[in-house]
Image (cartoon, rainbow, N blue to C red):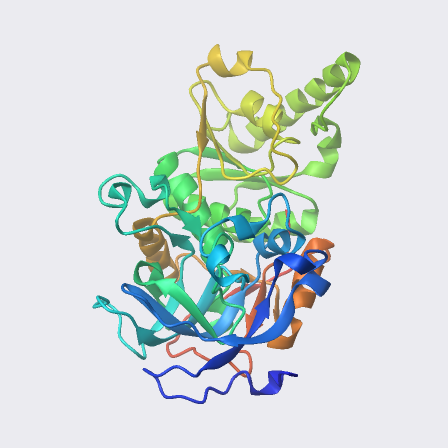
Length: 418
């Protein structure tokens, strides 16, 4: 049955009642491949909320690279995890803004009609780690709409009640759907994992990318000085407007990037470039960084360990250039540096981070807004690296700018990228 995407913004039921079916962009295991082919529009049954769950009518959704991996079935199939074995489908979309439409048994904090944004960490309420340690340590921990289904590329999504946050009133639906995954990740990395403080000096890789634009702003409001590594002078000027002390164009130091398998002579040459880069960082910051904000991995990690000051910290949340890391460990132990891993954020961190958005102390950075019919195309743009920043998808919203009910600055519209 063909689905009329022009009708997606219309819901046939009143708040509190769910329609029987909905339009959703779905991945199935038997069609893994390029996103443009793997992500297909289907009519599926609307899920009912279980205890402590909420159904949200999606007004806008944010696009992230995790759903490209889900489409490709790489590096492993998402169908091995979470609730996929039950439902046999994957509906992605790990960022969302919308309206609470129905609540499950036991939900008391949220009511039908509340306007919300969604953070993407899930864990079982029965795991003891959730009640005193950290939900990120729980064996049930999953990233919603990647390791589970029922994400935001549908008219309705299903979430745990603890995933909900109040939607900032001064943001439109698309602005509010654009920041959660990357911003909350950056917040945990800097504010909790390395206890960012005024006076710290910070090196941020990919400072004009999805994580970096928030890391830069967090440094600025915390009173820390940061230097960002970017791929163009234009992006360098952008991060300076976000509060960076200065920037370094990585193209001026391309020889420092680790490819893997370098010969001894190649490694010697690469190390000299890393030394030169470290000196450039010190010139901008007035000293070696206390913290290096890492998410690139193989290409940059040896330089990160070299560059951070003695007793400094390298905090890492990903490895976009490769996760097999090879570096000179002598610079780690002899100078007593630390490597700290970080993964997304818990509900308390997301709540504190969202409050800074509500106060306009941190602003989302958004590149483009597309219609619901463009979900597969948006992910193909990411797959082919043809995007120039964060993409939001209108779902229940019929045009840009809807959902804003208070005065205040919205998202910064910019072409960005690492």
